[in-house]
Image 1: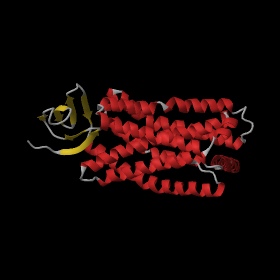
Image 2: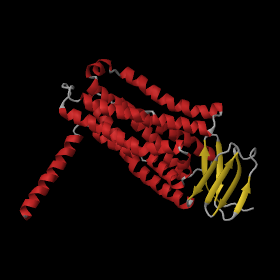
Image 3: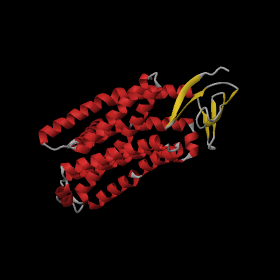
Image 4: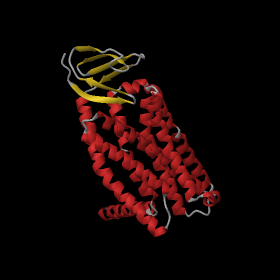
Length: 326
């Protein structure tokens, strides 16, 4: 029986391949082919009947969707990799100039580099499936670490406004390094669990969604708490207040737009069955390194003032043009 294999999916400890065919039925032995006991596809519709009762239904053209994902991944790499390297150099220059080490930002960029390097391996399409699988885990290590350091950056800005004296007395490089070790350890523990204890895909997927869901209320709390404490934070300059609020707003927007779809995909069965939403969710997740670069623009001192100045100048120029034409 001929099989025209087009693509593949990784399910933590289970690897399986799906085929594109017309009016063909395939029945696989569950013990020989992992958790998937039967397969059916008809005109691009994919249904997997699993031994544990799961059913996956896909109703889109996988070839076109995979090609679009491939092209967008290449674009993200071409834009994100050089800009991330430039941003790392900029952080290094800032450390030499001001003798202040933005430890969380540095680690955030390192996690972005891990994601981008994993994408390069995917685009290269290695023949050895083990290489692909290894970088699959490495990629999600970078994603989860990126989320953790986004929370650290937001927490740091919240403490500057809400608890300035406590923050300046407690802030040390040693405590920041301890936090970084904890942030890197959590994704490693999550990725080791399925390999060592044979955690099922459903449990691992739920754990991943929970890991992504926990920071969401924290971002909201940091933003609301900062806005409430703005009036009482007299020791903080007004330009610094604008910059901190902008950072927290951008962090919340990035998290809502890029990570919330992944949470929905992991927890809602109907969403995971939707092929278009599945590919869109993965693409949005890949945009995370570019979004972190946008947030870094707001982290840099003077960026908000320059942005407001440019907007005011453009408004003044447009008003002058209107008066001249009138």
